[in-house]
Length: 309
Image 1 (cartoon, rainbow, N blue to C red):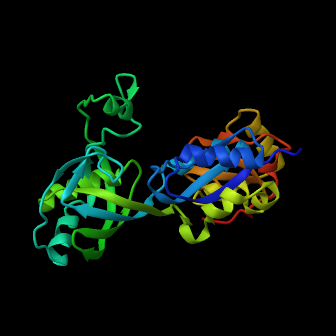
Image 2 (tube, one colour; image 1 turned 135 degrees about the horizontal axis):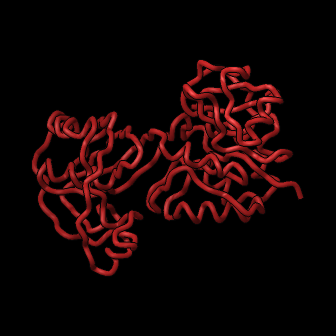
């Protein structure tokens, strides 16, 4: 059986861990490796980029992409997990609030902010994951992390629930955002529902519904695989000669004496004869390979035609 490599944009269903989605796709496609480009909590739904086979090498270049969410926040109730899956800690009456007051409070969180990660998270402290400590009844001090919120827009306010659109950078916890907003507004809050609508260039309307993935067999799912380079379409493309590509595979850095897009700077996609080779980094000292696919594999067959970015 030929090995499968590529990119699958999934629309995760509710009640599933990202790992369960990965495991299901791995079984259906009968491949040894499937990874994802950014964890979603079990209660969350929406865009979950999946990398299949050799394409898992591209995961680092997906994890740092900007994301968008639609979040439903329930005012007046706080929980230990900061979301609807947790134990209720307190209930308070919700004061009369108008949309203008809520939007003003949301505005306080736009930009670069300091955010304390939730105890129920996969971060580590003292060699253990925070959620393991939390389930053991242990709470530890967490160092605030700097995160970026690009937009927070109020979509609906039907007391005691509000719906917001969140556009943010990597590492942002929408659960923590909901909790902190509840503190600013007064009665406390928790995240009641969350849907991720975008990861980088990838939007929910282009994702394969979970119902389709859940019921699919190999023949149904394979046509939904995209070429591996689609996962890093946000990176600029550099086209190389066969000889230059061979030098990269031998671990050499291409200097100005080798024909390549010398004006390129930073991480880029690499192609030779319209075949995707992998990812490299261009700088003042030349072009070097970061992640290359093996020769003869599905991932280095022609995929997206290299275009200027």
